[in-house]
Image (cartoon, rainbow, N blue to C red; front, side):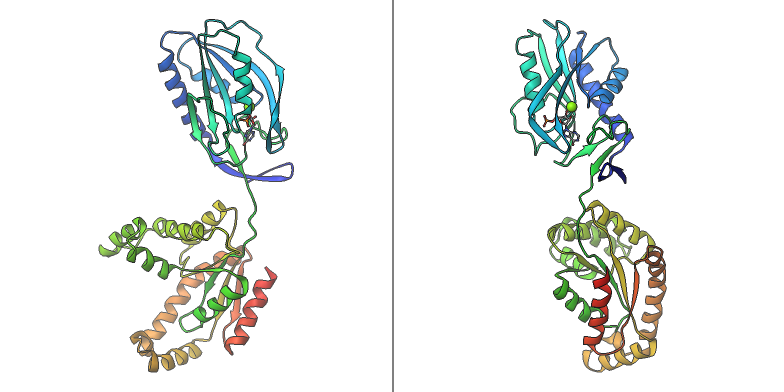
Length: 369
Ligand code: IMP
Ligand code: MG
């Protein structure tokens, strides 16, 4: 992440990807130009880096010139385009390709078209490295588009935010902070995790994402991800983390306006915890806390044996099975406890007492986040 003036930006398009995009545009345009010597017209300031890389890659003779227009103030495009340097040479009869760094509202492009109205060029084509289709309000045809991007502010590779960022070789996207409370909830079998998740959901208006439920939902409804997950399970293989993450992503996106999420049953490994961090980061958010209900083994065994008498669940009835499940749980949590402790995000909560008391303890932790 980088900071320019008062704002934060996150990596969006790598230097390598930009290079690949520029190369593809060069090839497309060189093919179309055949034996003509085109005049490339860069729109300053933003396009200087693009034009420079573009003409270096261009395989045949060409000419390069610039015009300088200004429209952007801060984060917004304005209707009022200033023509700072116009055309300084006669381009009549020439094949002209405008090289733009980015087309947003299309206001700048309109001014470019106005400049060329009476120039009697043979052909005027528009090439833009980036294009924001959601922001574009004009009808001018864009002949070459490097990459379509969402309507979010970017910097780097010639593009600036109030003067800064033009020098960066890669593209960064504005980070919009999301104020969410995202919890990873842990607890050994019998700790009362399900019960407490219900209260947390209510009190903080969070969405409870239980990985088990998400799997069952996707498989039952035969979603693409569900079928993919099932294909691994049918072979007796573990479902790859990416598939699970994609399912969680779909759940998070379904609830885009939530106050936050309770993740239950995920992550289980260090790699999954990292993948979850990445997912939350892509949503401009983060995991705020791992909350683990702590209950003494003997209490758990007692509770589960008690539950087994009435629940009919076979795995609740046998003490050896219960103890194995508890041991298994601690093995898995230890890794995550370390992971979140290192980030100061681990909170152990005493899970012994009345349901109401435990809820109070959980709320006290969350209220400090
Ligand atoms: P338009 O006139 O709205 O199409 O915007 C075109 C000009 O606005 C570009 O040449 C850039 O200088 C600037 N611009 C548009 N979007 C961005 C952005 O996301 N970051 C930085 N500058 C931008
Ligand atoms: Mg520009």
